Length: 317
Picture 1 (cartoon, one colour):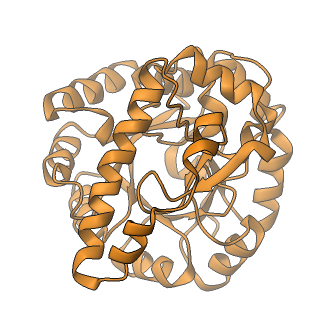
Picture 2: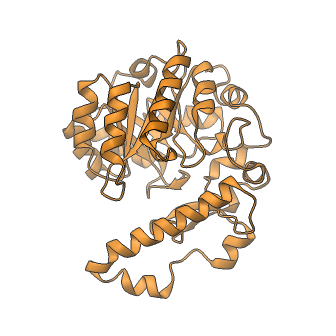
């Protein structure tokens, strides 16, 4: 447990700019690296493997000392692009991969052959032990204050439980909006933090001005958990539209989800519909505003460049 995130990634500050679906991009990660932290982009933010390859090359060309970059992979069967994405990432190279929603065995094995570190999202000790056994370089403890798909445990409880049973480092994800929050997570035993929501309201984020402004105007008390996005509980801003449609699954989905054979297909359909809705809201003004964010937007008071957001987070760290 002596390995720190700064040492693992050779970065100045123990912070990863978290991968955010539709939000994260090359410009954001470039600025993150210039500011001395790591940045990560979901591979699914690119429609084709060629676009993904271009992003990797652009980040390699702009990498600066004290910064690092990586990509997030959804490693379960719902991501039909997974194997191609992993192949391209390993061919081009990056500093790290973050895996989510599935068995990371293949990713860990292939990435390590190319000198790429692998961090795995976990929400409990059961899965954390599995990824450690598979050779993960660190566990990302996704707690109940995370934006998007969150865990069930508090940051303190989850970090302490993982540290008590794991030999690999623990990175905390969720509930960080200011320097004091970083200090708190490190005091619990985390070697660093993954921060997402505060970067939505950045100049470099490629989402609508309305989405960015919502992160300024709304706060922690305006974040609700909905089942209407992906079939899995997901945090969103409680806009008038979200209030109108409600946050619970429909009665038809509720019935179908009780059927073992149909449950998987219902979730896949809900995921597709939900992702299309969030994409429309993120990319253009619409009355159907489904904006994903976490409670850490409480500290977002204005739209700023990434370097200024990093500056506020690190203080004198």
